[in-house]
Length: 396
Image (tube, rainbow, N blue to C red; front, top):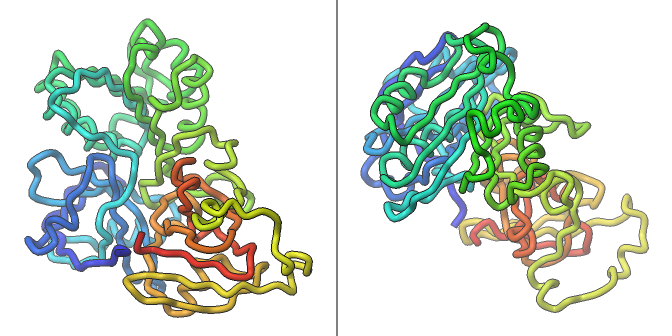
């Protein structure tokens, strides 16, 4: 079944830095199983701000054994939701929250003996923090190295918590801070975490080649540059897990997002199954190996329309949609369907559904892995119909 919002009460709010807070939600016993999460997953929070409904996704940063579901919210300059939340979220406030989603995760196993590396910048630490805590707690034979970039010491989220982890797991947790706007000693720790910096660190501070799993999270410019450097170095892509904390604007450029989570980007961004326009056949078409376009495709696109069926919670929403009109998600919402979504930028993956019938074109896809696309999954926020009928199912 598709996921829905639930009202959760804020139990506590901690001022983490000058512009960031940690919010702890109390999950009632009846919703415990629904809100069970894997380290690295996120939740979507919905609120009405100045008369407009806004949704933002935030990574869960609860430590193992924590009774609260915690997220970090950093105020973004000009950000409507984050500025409102930092001012408004107090103990006792009730918020609408979607259950956890996301694939930027780790599956801790006591039998594992792995070498983990995380490269994070700014609020990109939030999912990484949960991953580090879980691995160190469960996998006694594993080691974790964190390269964490920030502007200043005062802007470091989880500064004290990370120091405590370092003291608790001295032999298994290596913590390295990098500051771009403060000079530290030695100089190798001063500046941005980019490809040049990693080149300086290789074999001196970190042996990248021996890492079993590498997690990268932060601004898009950093994540893409670091990922590409690792690939050029010969690190297998299956070992590299990347989450974006920004969404593309109309031109495809990434801009800073208020929410601090995106989605797993497992492949190269120029792979048509991972980013950019991709034509997706339904699972029925793949099974039948149908060939050639139907007759309707001979018409100009402006004259073509599609009968769209959206399945969600056992209900069918059926409407006509011009092929050069709205994307499927927006059209379905306008029709009155209650569907899960957050960023609408092809990044968070909350609006994922399975294409049962027809073909669609996704304008952008920074969320789904190639295997998911092959299995018929699409991002409805980025999908335009290409055939006379299209059916998508949010319940699969």
